[in-house]
Length: 551
Ligand code: ATP
Ligand code: MG
Image (spheres, rainbow, N blue to C red):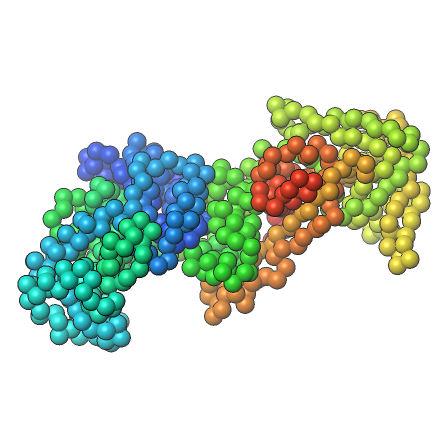
């Protein structure tokens, strides 16, 4: 990673924070990560988490986790719990756990202040009229007839809104700013709406709920946030953020700074759209390993280290861009190359009978769990008369320069012996179903005498190996930017999941813990599925291939 404008040490947000601290603008940096609990976190959120928690940690500051829970109909405690779990899993600890709903009473009080100052009014326009009155990018808006309502009347109506005297949608509290502003967000934005919905924390205490823009800045100020980091789509909302804080009696005025959202090719980073995939059954759940959610990535075998590394590599800038999936995959590949234990698995088994090997004999061969890391120890790999190799490590009609097994040819079984194929047995359909071989007993850990054997293939003992289901995942969508499609579901990749039910894995995996990660030699990186593995049925998810196969 070069030290350019987007490298972690020098991104523009870190520069602002460093400067503010040097100028003693703040004693301590306080940031927050403010998800709405309306879905599971995705890889885009990871960028925001790493930035908010990272900036705080680097400067001996604090970062809060704040649930932005002002839209009760879409929010749930299940999502709250999932988000807490994911933030912890990524490796971060919040200073305080807050909820926007903690501030409902304060927010109400500040709204009363705005009304008293003549800066907010109760409006009876219908939703449709409001849209009509709002104007457009080229045309100024029109003032509501209710804009001139007296302060007394506004105070009375607002308190009756809270008391539940009106129907949902009958009234709205709006800020009185400027219907002709070139910024549509400043054209008397809504502050409160009437909505009779049960809230997961405040129950039925409230029938009016504050709007996002109104809630966010005040919540930031109450928590003493110094730098309120958000994505670029909020740039046009900053004048409103500042207007609200300038017009209520509160000491703190956080600085909103916007950065580019993470977009990742061939997937979707929007809770709303991911929710649609779950609800419509296109995936098995929020934690489907094809999902770009943290829960999905975890289940696929991604590590927190790899995701944090990814967030550093992509950097933080003001320019929108879409990141190639290969960047994320390289991060996990590098991490697993260093940390994952090696093992052997055969996905498409072909039986090999070693005719000159003693019947019933088992040799307990030793193999390193990691070729470069002795500390990871060794394991026992049993060798027997019958073994399985991959179907495609044998070629009936070998292409030029084929180095694996052919009739009459030799190959080394990794960590074991050199074998030679004498006879190919086919079924009625002409498919190769078994190979008859012999082994050279002098080749255990030694080169064969008088000849070169180039090919090395993986294998498992037919008598000791365990049955496994292996799930191979591919990109979830067929197009780099599914969000741009009219119906993104039409762009789903129908082959994003391939299930292999007859795979064989080496016996040392019998004791593997759920969620543990392996490099199946020559095959890829895999993780023992935490949800669907049961006694006697191992399910492995492919985390990533050994090499970048997309480009
Ligand atoms: P979604 O559309 O997926 O619901 P959101 O922005 O509405 O995303 P929030 O729960 O409100 O989701 O987001 C919490 C924080 O995460 C916000 O500060 C938001 O800006 C940030 N965030 C969300 N998506 C991304 C992304 N793709 N890249 C970077 N930051 C993101
Ligand atoms: Mg949102």
